[in-house]
Length: 254
Image 1: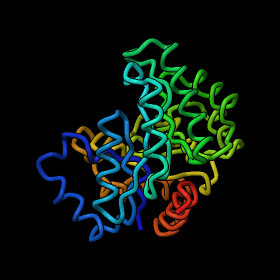
Image 2 (image 1 turned 135 degrees about the horizontal axis):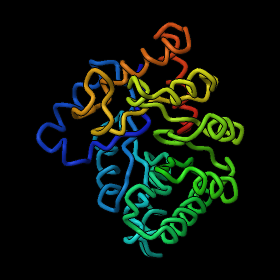
Image 3 (image 1 turned 90 degrees about the horizontal axis):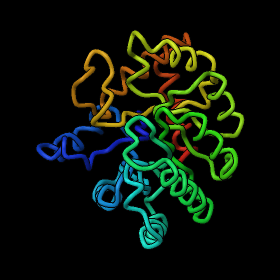
Image 4 (image 1 turned 120 degrees about the vertical axis):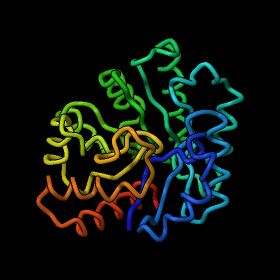
């Protein structure tokens, strides 16, 4: 079975056919999905989806691009959502220096606050890091250090940094980018990092794998990611599928 550890089915890209897409998952070997909150609205909708579908779980967190919406009251709301039975992680949280939508100091402040929340509620973290690899790593090491576990979503750092995250007990999230011809570093990371520390994700509706690059992504496309991981590792697709599914269950304690 396939486990999508990071998707956004609350996104408006699915407004026209969300029910149809999600209802097709079981027939396409998709057994579990974690719908990840990125905004206050996204957290609410992720929780709602987890209530509606038995195979969907929620993650509650505020993306760094939404740091300006954060407050003590919002943090209390996130705490309440983390206490729900089907909320399995705090995320996605982290830093994004690509667009610098919010001041970096604010991003860092609320990233740290949400890492502390994860420790308080004893849930793993789902980490976003874009063009902020060193600051993300330094904050993770100082403020979390693998204490409740977690996954580095859509990993884009160096091989040495991937190794350091694994040493701290984090999983590395691998999605459609690994199928791109120019993703040499990510392919090297997949080759180097033990399979027991890799999990699969889509970031749906984004980052569709080849041959659908640029199109709307969904969890059914993870078969292409699994095939590429298997090719790189020199293993059967079934073996990779089985191991990363168990990894994801361990990550989210399911």
